[in-house]
Length: 274
Image (cartoon, rainbow, N blue to C red; front, side, top):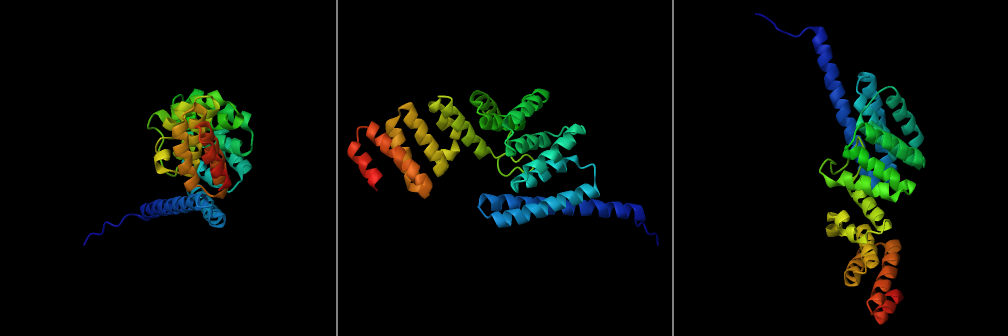
């Protein structure tokens, strides 16, 4: 009876591929759990999961040194644990070695932001955008850097272009660290700073419908700045009802201002007393 068992070399190669795939899935799962824990404010769990993910990504690079796509998520785990300098060293080494992965370039910009080197981040982002024009991920990172550097007009232009199409994926992006909801909030803040309050509601989009206190507070500020007093009152009342203590104080002061500007001085005083 004939036996067609694969040769030992083929079995070893198959085993290596399976090991790499299994390790990659474990790394992604730990990374996702770490990001989720960080969003929930569980710092201890986030650090543990992100540290585990980082170790698994490093193991993968030992298994297969050609996996250049792993440097970006590895950098993200370092950034999420507050080690921007290490993330920058990792990213810049690969970029100088000729790696042209866009997620890696995005993480390099994020690392510079994390190191508070905002001007340098804007400069690097400009080079990357020039080399790969129109990529929404690079435009988003450029907008983030410009916002931190106080370059409002550049931030508005870059974030507006990044968010205009459907090139940015929603949800947790482990490779780039970009979060569409955060980008929308930044874009809306920049529009307000640029003296374009009427555009803030459109920039926030579904965040207003979802009723998050941060989005409502920002929209209320914009409506107040635009002179849309009845809308500002309604929005800020929602913000007061949904905010925690620190935010509630801000929302209450703004609501009082809106009521006063709407000719409701008595109600404004009552709100402050409460």
